[in-house]
Length: 343
Image 1 (tube, rainbow, N blue to C red):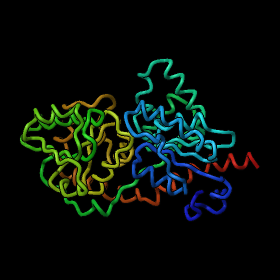
Image 2 (cartoon, helix red, strand yellow):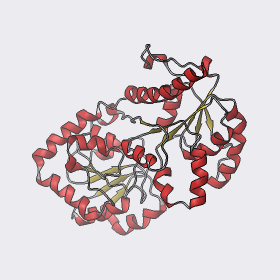
Image 3 (cartoon, helix red, strand yellow):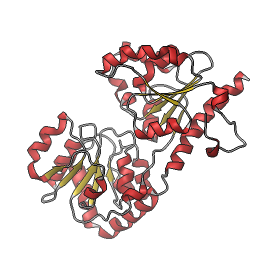
């Protein structure tokens, strides 16, 4: 089940033959999560056979219970997939859940009865794989399940030809309040005559802010070549209220930016290695703090240039091979221990 080419041969080797069947239960899937599942040789299966509103999907997800009962290894793309896995898991089956969404972020705001139900289902999970130390910490506040970090990767070649210039600000990704787009728009307004280039699709909760900002905010929509628009910018900012990792941050670093990020971005620990000044303070991001950070970079061109070079170099270490190995090693640890116990 785990690709032997990724493993230390002195450690437990797990194959499809000795695990009978492995399933990757997904809701999206996010391309990275699909690659992680593929790297383990798992059979992809959508968590619900009836796409639609989430309540409908959750109800129909129980039809996946028979498939779950046949599996010895199950990887869940996230908590959306938890119900059929928790109900169908049989003794000897290993259940691994990827933690890279809003589930643990929102958990404290849920009602007590719902929390209790979810905790019962979470108790069936043998390993949580978080995409950042930030996400790991959020999960550990809720449940004590073993939790290991596996880091996403960046297509460095795609972004490395970008040459940032000028004073415009760029951002790639989903455009909504969770990503702090309203804060970023307000910060740009404080910075005078420069544009904010948003590369992504806008959700309803920020469309009014975009419309009100007028010509200062440019939205490209979804594009296969975001790097072309990044080349029109001199700064990159992700001031998210909640960003599980933020592959866009690695992409910006690969493009030669020294990104300004909030402490609630999962990738902030990587940016912090270049300089803590690039990471906004703890708590809710605000427009004044973001604007001040951008001005600081404008006023310190030597440090800015040094950090841009350091970010580009550091981003190149986050390769696909590294990401696949981290995930495989995490899964192998818990699955291998279970197989040993089963003899």
